[in-house]
Amino acid sequence: MTELRRTPLYDLHIELGAKMVPFAGYEMPVQYPMGVMGEHNHTRIRAGLFDVSHMGQVILRAPPEALESLVPVDVQGLARGRQRYALFTNDAGGILDDLMVANRGDHLFLVVNAACKDSDIAHMQAHLPGVQPITDRALIALQGPEAEVALSRLVPGVTAMRFMDVAVLDWNGVALWISRSGYTGEDGFEISVPDTSAETLCRALLAMDEVAPIGLGARDSLRLEAGLCLYGHDIDTTTSPIEAALAWAIQKRRRVEGGFPGADRIRHELADGTSRLRVGLLPEGRAPMREGTPLFASAEATEPVGTITSGGFGPSLQAPIAMGYLPTALARPGTLIFGEVRGKRLPARVAALPFRPSNFRK
Image 1: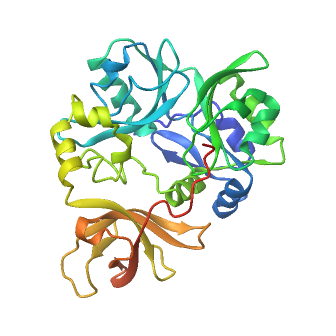
Image 2 (image 1 turned 60 degrees about the horizontal axis):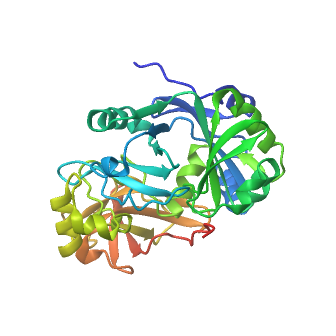
């Protein structure tokens, strides 16, 4: 067995009473004494602090068009001080990973998923010059409607930032790499901070009434309510961006020009549609339909037509919610389908995503 790695905030998690679990090769906090439900609701109402230091941070000193050879998004059109959601695709049009790409003037800054970061970095190094993995900085996320109030006490400049802005701002002589974005559907920030200053910054934030520590459990329920994909579950190497309902991430120029891995399949699906789609699902009972639940077109059908890829309880909706893949003909909101839970066929309705409106600061 490979020994689990620890983030620079491990000791703080233990001090705060976190329950630690293995995740993407790291020991990570799944919840704190407040509990998953309390942490979820605190983030929706006030502000939650997440350790996301397990994710990969990469500086890329290569022309934007070089990165466009690996992703189907418009990197050349990304303005300085802005970031964009992107996807690494393979030659078959599947998704190798999803990531964030920021234009910081003389270089690009990328944040990739923890489980994929080693393969992502190797993929970039095999195809691009100037790939510089960052190994001496932690990454935290501050999310929720009071995130700006809290962070601006330490870094006043964040009040001028809009959703998807990036900036390097000073905090007591420490350069913080900040983006106004996040994975919860709430306004918030992701903050890259030197390892040596990470705990001090977190303690300063946690000393504020608005801020509480949040674990992986609430992070998952928050992103599920926001209709956001988790790599390896809702998207993977067999899933195209179009099947995953991520066509919005492919800008017009790239649709016309192509020139990225899997372009033939992806452009064909953009023009002609695809046989299946990622959809939201609202089970009609109280029982959650979790990942792997087979989906059927009727209570009597013998063959499944799809499967759930993420599912659980949505605290903000006070109801079970799920996402999964269905044939396009069954993907219309309101369509009745059935999930098989413990041998019983239970009804669910296809629902539009996200399950609740996002509160990003546009």
